[in-house]
Length: 404
Image 1 (cartoon, rainbow, N blue to C red):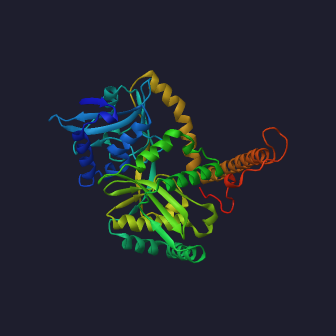
Image 2: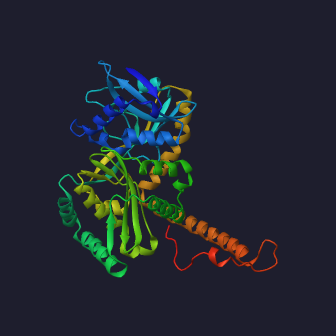
Image 3: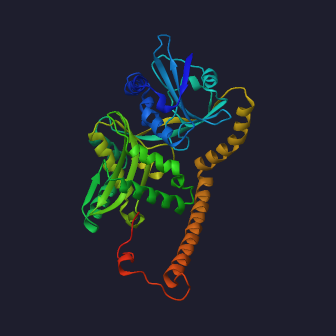
């Protein structure tokens, strides 16, 4: 196998065109998951602009033409990770029909002892035997259009569909006319979404992904990335002039990924996230998208919205190497424990309550620190001589809160 390795920016225009063409034809070649936008060259380029460890292996066939593309991240010690591991919802090698590769040979060509993945696409015969676990990844099928999807949804759960549509109308009556923007181009709304999501992470005791600067930079990179075959897509649900829910995901020719959804908690009674997802499905179907990929994870809203499931895999491809053995020995117990908790309701529910309790405690402490900071700022000047009052022009407007 003839393999060359390069940085994302070193790909030629011809190579990128071949990569895009392979994705566009993937559904015709019996490997539809390869059309996912997380496997697109644009995603690899965006991650590469935010991180210095991204590489792309280009494998050529007997005719000398590019036959497969393998994006990954690599440490100095030869430990490989799927590109965007922990963020990306589809990983693997994008290849032309009939292209066969052996995992060990590919890793050797890339200088890797091990390659870790958590959302490996099903269309990856070269990594057979590398998976340690498989998971359902719910999707919404829009190939027949939105009305066909809505009919299937009503047939399965008429009360869910009816209630969500009722809350859509109720939001309009109580707050303001509901307006959905499928492709919002205001970058300020991207910042609002990230602020909502960060607050959600903290509130539920999860790690805040947007505390990492490279991830914030990545979303801004993707927000400004647009072509006929790929786009970062920000969608926003408004009630009157107020944004109440938003989502940022990626779109390829046939697939729209549901990646970062969030909403303003003060509108929670209207289920704005569900309202937004139904409107997003309708708009995506209208522009020719065939599938909304909701991503791996057992969430009630995904179960309510989905029409089926894909399969994604987690595990390691490795060579006989001490670094590979050490990496797996360190990572395997943590992954096994996490998966056991997440897939066992009797364990997940108390763990989730514990995390939420930690989040509430963290939020309370943050609030106390903010109150102390404000008290010091508002009641004493720098000399400690007494109350300090901001000039009228500099005093903050407290008549309305900033929902971001």
